[in-house]
Length: 207
Image 1 (cartoon, rainbow, N blue to C red):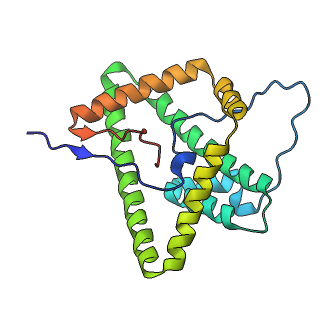
Image 2: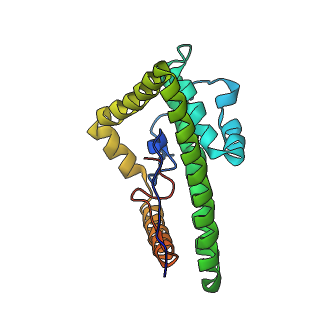
Image 3: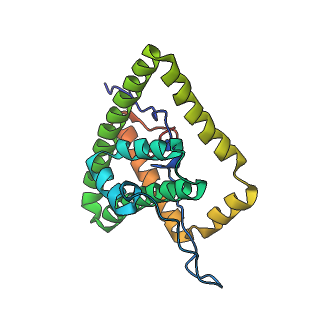
C-alpha cells in the first residue's frame, strides 16, 4: 500500500521564484540597453549564485533583507530580485537540460534525483518557516514585520500592470515553455508513481 506524501509549497517570498515562470529581457533593442543599477557586493549575481549552492533558502532571506533596507533605491531592490530570479531560472534550465539530454532509460533516474532534491529543500523551507513562526509568536513586533513584508509582496504582484505581464509573457521562448511543460508533466507523473502528491504550484515555487 502506497503512502501519499503531501507536498505543501512553503509560505514566503517564493512567488519570486523557485516559480515556474521565466523572466527574460529581449536581446534585440532598438537603442542600447541602460546599464543596471549598481547593488552592494553581497547582492551581486555571482554572490547569489554561491549562496544558492550553499542554501537556496538563504537567497530569499537576502531578497527580504534588501526589501527592508532604506538605503537602497527601488531600482536597486528590483535589480536584486532580478538577480535572484535569474539564478533560479538558470538552475531550472540546467535541470531540464539534464533530463532531456539523458538517454530514455535514464530519464526516470534523473527525475528521481530531482524529486529527492526538491523534497530535501521543501523540508529545509518548512523547518525555516516553523522557526520564523516560533520567533514571531515570541515577538509580536517580528510577527507584524513578517506579515508586512508578505503584504508588500502581494500588493506588488497585484499592482503589476497588464502591460508588464504581457511583456514578460511575450519575452518567453515558446520552445522553452513547451520544454518546461513537458518536464513538469513528467515530474508530476513520476511523483504520483512514487506515492507523492505534487505541489499545486510546482516544485520550484514557494507559495
